[in-house]
Length: 404
Ligand SMILES: *Cc1c(COP(=O)(O)O)cnc(C)c1O
Image (cartoon, rainbow, N blue to C red; front, side, top):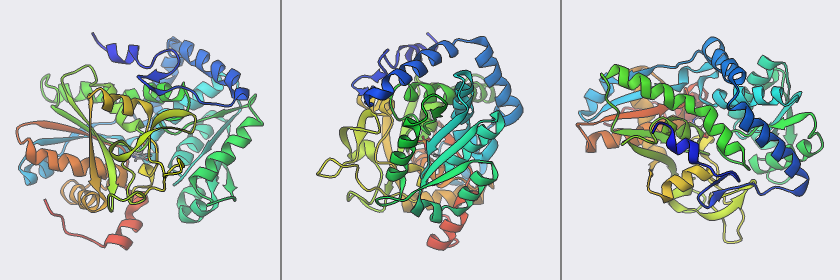
């Protein structure tokens, strides 16, 4: 039956198998119950769904196309590669899909403000965009170190009218930004919604963000079948940071006989601190209000992580990805920094598409899979465009030739 899996997962407490739940302080319980109850009603509300649909087509530019990467596929001489073009979604990535919906939820709850943390600023920019659209205030917490590193995104957020609050304690990066945003949220529960940026955090966020991203998979399945006279792809590939773009495209194919691949950043080595391959190397634990697989130090602290893609360097992963791995529904794979940069140049040169470094991880693995399965079709979620990454790539890796 259609969407059987999505109806059954998670359970009413927000668990996907043993992962998920809501590990939150008592003063937040009532508010999170309210959000959950409101959302369970809204997801069935014709008005809510109609407004989202209208925003997606008139403002975001959806549906984004599925594109057959003919030149790259033929050059590799393997499987046919197809890209779901989330880089063409307004603001240049899939993140706006859930930010617009979270902002609409906030409005429905009578809130006037959105709060979030951001690492590289991608979630901050998408949320500031949504806030501007709905006329909501927007407060983005960001580590002082990241503010300096990610200058263009900080400027974007300010232009869009967001207040950027620097986190000035500790290492002054993402972890401190989470603490800072959380503290601020606790003092304004009546007026603000904490808008989480991936399929992570306490229930109901992994459920909501998956639902909001599922538009990617639903569209892609229809589009692919239309292009191929009713076939399904044999393989669907996506990169995984928290797991939202992957859950988005996986949602469309989860009840189909299609292999799903979650591609993690293998970075520059297997040592803790040199990668962010959580599902590959992590262990069970609790972080940021939910139970999942995490990269931890021996002391049980979140481990330092590395990836050339700032959207992937998170020491945790969404609970549903952990569950789907455990039941064998999702295959966990990886791409190193080097393989990723090669893929970045490959689709730039062969297709005229500069991908986000996050998305280039998925493409790197798909290129390998294409060689192994020459008769198949592979659909990759091209989660975002790479304009944000061009200076970093050229400064650190130079202008490169492509190896296929
Ligand atoms: C943030 C980001 C990701 C990683 O987040 P997920 O929740 O794992 O999807 C991937 N691609 C792009 C372009 C991003 O901006």
